[in-house]
Amino acid sequence: MHDRGRIYGVMAGVFTVSLWASLPVLRSLADLPPMLVAAVAMICASALAQLFGRLQPNRSGTDPKQGWHYWLMAVGGLTGALYGYFLALQSGDPAKVTLVTYTWPLGFVLITDRLAGKGIRLRTLLGSAVAFIGLMPLVLSSSTGSSTSWLGYAAGLAAGASWIAFSLYLRQSGGLSNRGYSTLFVHVSVIALVVHLLFEGPAPSVAITDWLVAGLIGIGPYGLAFMSWGYALRHGPSTLLGVMTYLVPVMAAILLVLLGWSRPSYQLLIAAAAVLGGALVTQTSRFRRMKLG
Image (cartoon, rainbow, N blue to C red; front, side):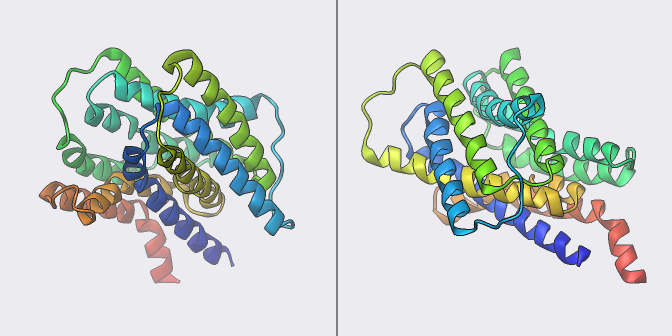
């Protein structure tokens, strides 16, 4: 039963990164300021969670206790991840700040191993390093060559740290109910809207399709993905899930190739092989136990 739960957790992780990989395509179709997209998406994600709650009233999970952990790690973590990454993109080369942001999976697996009393394991460092180094040619191949200020790098690191905090909260919360996710998404939506009004200004006149795409982002890459990520973190192996997040830019690149927006490249093949290799390295001891068993 325990192994079955881990398998379901890994499947939820694959589903999550697949949805996240669709975000670059969907975001390019919505001509709205970034934090306004986040606000609209989070409201739609909240409505989706409410609908799930009505369809599955007995689903396991709890409503979040709105103490400082919730506001700092859940609401602050998710909001900070969104705003920090958008700020980083505005402050420098998108490829460079994306690469900096993607240092977060290593930090996540090291912290979860530490909290689990496992210490710093060599295969964790090696597996994450293989995946990250293999990802570098793919991400940097889209570099514009523009200069990146210290603010861009700092915002990218802040986005990664915020995502670590959010993921740790989901892993340690014991599982949020659909109602709990709905409440969380509403709180993030309100803060995102305030940030939009303060720093981005009013939105220009846009087409209805822009609002529809923003809503679709809330249903998929934000709504379903965030909820399935929470499930994956509770049931799946944290080390493997951390490495799997490196699949997001790989799968996004594959999607762009399939749509005809990009061409296949050797960087894509290297990145895909490196992420898979890194995942295998982190799970070597588990494979040995399965073979011995």
